[in-house]
Amino acid sequence: MNFDGLSGDRALYGVSVAAELTGVQPQMLRAYEAKGLIEPYRTGGGTRRYSGDDLARVGRITTLLAAGLNLAGVDHVLQLEAETQRLQAELDALHGRQRRRKKDQQ
Image 1 (cartoon, helix red, strand yellow):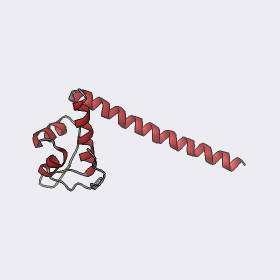
Image 2 (image 1 turned 60 degrees about the vertical axis):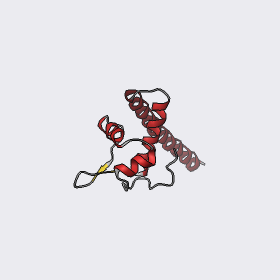
Image 3 (image 1 turned 30 degrees about the horizontal axis):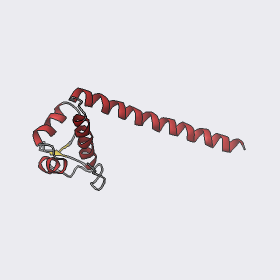
Image 4 (image 1 turned 180 degrees about the vertical axis):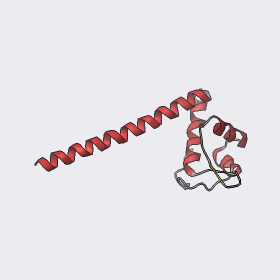
């Protein structure tokens, strides 16, 4: 599933629209939320609103489930992917500082 064209972090989509866009039943979206896999925005009245990023995450969850993982395995993979992204950003920042230092020494 490709959700690139949808608004990234703006919570625009209600649960029925999110379900239609992702092909995931509303009760499964609620189950993903209960397991902590997604965290949709809540309006003052408690209504769930999903962003494009949330929909992309649901797509990733769906892919992992189709590959044979259970929800606990999906949670672990998502945590590892987030940690990998954090570490990559840290490494990129360190490389950038190293390049600037070398440039300043010249």
